[in-house]
Length: 503
Image: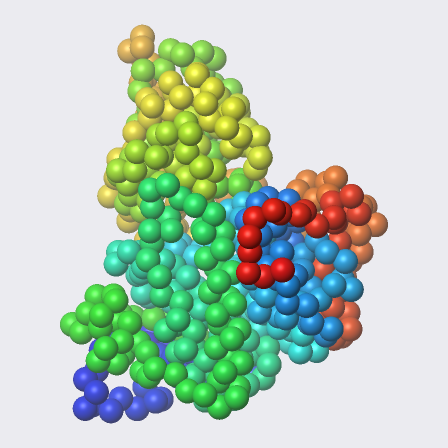
């Protein structure tokens, strides 16, 4: 690996292309790096994982809306939409929109946390859709996904967006553009222009994850993917982009992020070095914001230890800066304590999540979020006894550069009415590579079967799992079958009486 210093340069300096971050990213996207065996296997795991959560969200409202919009843009040799008959095809950018929304809706796929936040699995819907439409094979897809992960993970390590209230999809647009460049075997110049265009048009604010969180949280990465696909298409036609997008005088760094005086350090593999960043990412066992995963596991274990939860006087969760200020009481969002809040808000409230997991000794992607569950009197009472606070020890662990030492948990201090105190801590989630029950192929398949049970047939489940596990050998015609069809009774398109533009 190498460390790239990124800073603003005045226009008169005429920064050379080869010295720009976008060009260096484009170089690794267009290289001939060998594929790491473990990284290849993880690509398969993450495609299974994405399919799991996409099918589980098939009949949720944002997913239906995105799918209906996509179905207004059918294309004979286009891409598939998750859940539909594979004979139905739409333009790849609209498949990206529909499938990306389905993958993100339940907040249940993979994550990477460093200087910023990310869900690298959001790269997959766009790269898969373009692969299906353009006749790519399984190895092309693998290479494209590995590049997408590599770029996003390393941008997240080097450039913090959230401190400037910029949403993390600003790293997703460039990573998808780079991944598509690898998939399509584009030259460095075209990928360079695509990365810059994709970044320029995918910068948005974090208000989508603040206050009363709406369904846009599910649409946001799909929108970034759709825009990235269109950016790559334009650049393949010879169009250019704002340049240099990171280092320019009026660039992203200069006027959106930390300004002309700031230097960022972005790690990147060397040209032709295997791309293995996907191995640093981790999926979710529970459908909730990643920083709650370990604390859900801790709450489950405490459920067996505390017999009468009504005897609890107060719960303090000591955790990292990010957890405290994003999903804890440090966010100062009253909605995070509101029993009438949206599901999207509740899955970003560690107070709610910990209370439910402590009461139930379990977590469920649907049952744990129902309005009835959120309004249960005992839950509301317990929920409002919970506060979070930052502990610099946990913040330091969160930012540890060694993936084996990086932690996303915290210490929970429970004060009982009789004066007793119960204190326990957890460093990482059970499913984390360093956790008590790390996810491997068996666990990904089990998650897939649980989430798709009753939604797809056993024969369809077996067909998809057999196909995806043979990904490296799939030809273009096989890749068009890398989709899942839900049972016939669920395929009927729901009608709406609301006015709309796309029909």
